[in-house]
Image 1 (cartoon, rainbow, N blue to C red):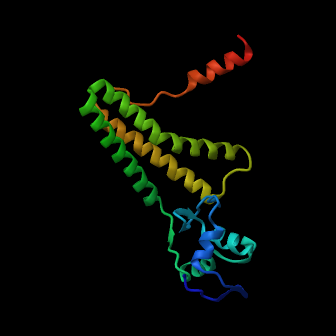
Image 2 (cartoon, rainbow, N blue to C red):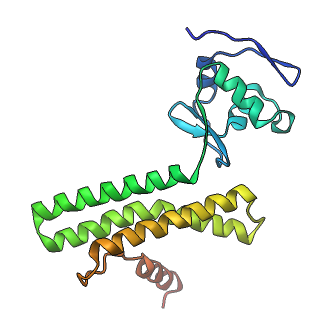
Image 3 (spheres, rainbow, N blue to C red):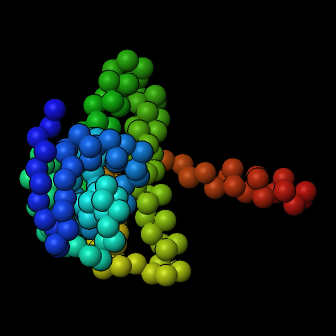
Length: 196
């Protein structure tokens, strides 16, 4: 059983264990991490989201530092989200893509290797591009906060780094590794809907 630690946060009593916090966060989706993060149930959350959700307190009534102090004291590890972590994730993706396609090449030959590389690059780049597209849409509406702008810039940089690594990998080979975009499918769907 987790140790129960009683403390005050902004004059209010906090009396939950790590296990109780994990149980209350079980079906919660993480919000956008700005500067600080805490891992709960294998997912990264902003510390204020966790403390606010498990206590029901309004997020404006306590600071990120208070949330980190409480969560650290009951056994969670809080950290600062940095661009370096995003780059490490990108490097991991690139290493995985390379390993996968090199194995494909040895098993199935060059043409399958090229298709495999392109497919793996598409799998790696697709979630990054989707998140960038979502943020671009948000820019058209209410706009982006300063933290979201920084996150957008980091993602855009990561995508560029992955593409540059792929370009270097194929330099001088004449191979176009870039994944095909599903433009044709969208055009076919539009044609079907209009009946042209």
